[in-house]
Amino acid sequence: MSDQTHMHVEHDLAPGEEEQHSVGERILGYVVGLGLALLLTATSFFIAGTNLVWQPSIPVALIVLAIAQMGVHLVFFLHITTGPDNTNNVLALAFGLLIVFLVVGGTVWIMAHLNQNMPPMDQFIRMHS
Image 1: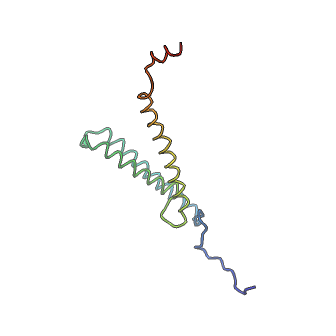
Image 2: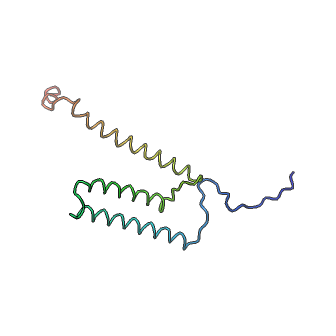
């Protein structure tokens, strides 16, 4: 047996564990995230309903604001950061996005080609009557 003493190191965390913060720090993080999300939402509605912005740039501005809001949600509410302990969370998120893309993209692809590959309805009714 070794005579080494096992000391608890405060910065040695297992994957998925978070450092313990006080309740005030956690609430402050959520309030800041909520404030940013509300600001981005209000800005989106303002841009969509005003004539102060060049009209062809409105879709691009809304897409940029939507991506920014996704980033706010990922960081402040889902706690996805660039730290090494978040690798599993990022991989799970990427896998979820892949599944959603495959399901939605596959459904749209099938529906787009369904009309092209189906016989006309009057011919279908004559065949089965």
